[in-house]
Image (cartoon, rainbow, N blue to C red; front, side, top):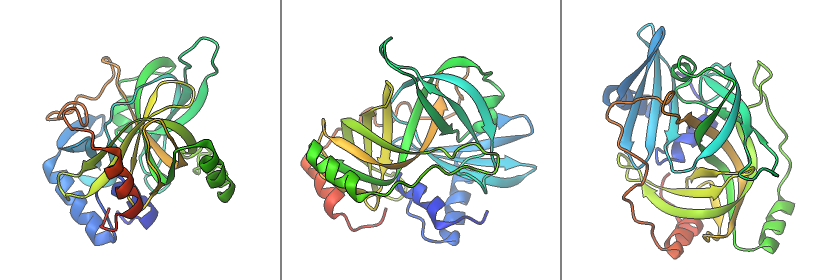
Length: 281
């Protein structure tokens, strides 16, 4: 699997800094040897869950590895009107498929919020879930660039400095699972990847439309002052997993909810990490 450095940055968001194809292949081999099989018709995924919500999904077909996607299993929950599934190639996207639908509002008067979400276990999901239906989704936004601000004035200044990147699409015409988001921070913690000992930032934010969304970021992607109750805004890749009991993926050996017993560090520590961390990640 020959991949580009932009793809590698998503692994850095969960504490796997990758700077070369050789490093990627070593990580791929470790995940394949350490993970648990999740079968689908015609092949399988190998899901490696070393802890702290970190997951890698390796796809195997005809005894060959054809793809690998990072994932973070967090605490956010969205109620989504699932409309359709869309198969992709790993060359065109981070995963081999996505879902399209709309986040249903928490209040009856609210408006639904359209979304495209990549699925790390796409073929195993489509073999169990039939759209259209309403599902519960855990989704994680992997930060490409994220600014943390405490007040509206700082947010306005940051917005003025950004350029509209537009919406990209794959060859099938379906939009990439990337979005510019602005959200209020509900919870924040600094997690440590159990394999690399690299830190990464994990947030739970109020999602546009309703519900909650997880965000992960490396120090390279995050800037500003992090405050619970403050705001984050940036550009993200969105990946998710359908959690309904009738359609969730049963991965042997998975260790519960992400960060279930992890203490939340003081915010000053998080802000200092966002501002000044210069180690890898």
